[in-house]
Length: 112
Length: 113
Image 1 (cartoon, each protein chain N blue to C red):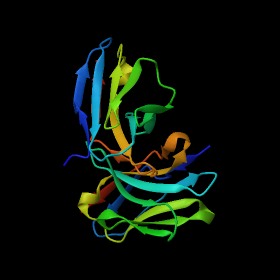
Image 2: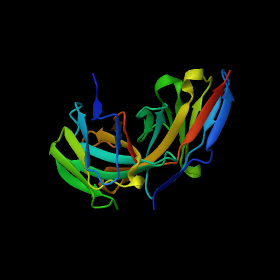
Image 3: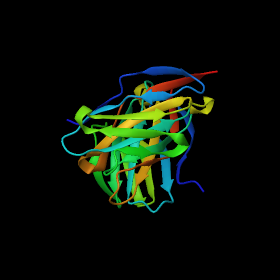
């Protein structure tokens, strides 16, 4: 039983391309997040959605656009990919009224 | 501003030895504190959490952590380390606005046999 799943696990693409990463959770949680983990393993939040509503939008380039079609899904679309976008992207979720977060396995994005 | 400091970037311990990973936080009120573990190529797994009550909390895999308000610390401990504990460990504090957690930079644990 996968709690938080992400697809794809690996993504290799060229600069300038547009790509999407999908996230699904079957935990019944209300809040979902996207994090970026850089090469130094520093984990930085990008976005957070609660019941399909955007509640956190950190200083992230406009090329990144999250979309939450329902509370179990939070997708991340990236336009015009740049070399600096190479990182591991983690999706996470948390239940209403709790702050513990459950993470997906990550998507390693490599931009060449 | 809320922040988390993990002073040790790397720690190496012998298998069977005890372990303590340090975490110091800055937070304006009573914090919620977490330890996560990340094995190579994997996502983050919640080891334990502190919300309130007993300041010594037990987690999975034989880990425990102690909340010390006076020292703004939440150190992670394990009495006897196994080779499978080799991973990176992250401390986190929250919530901040939007239920956000702030993560430390991580401590890499190496276990030598």
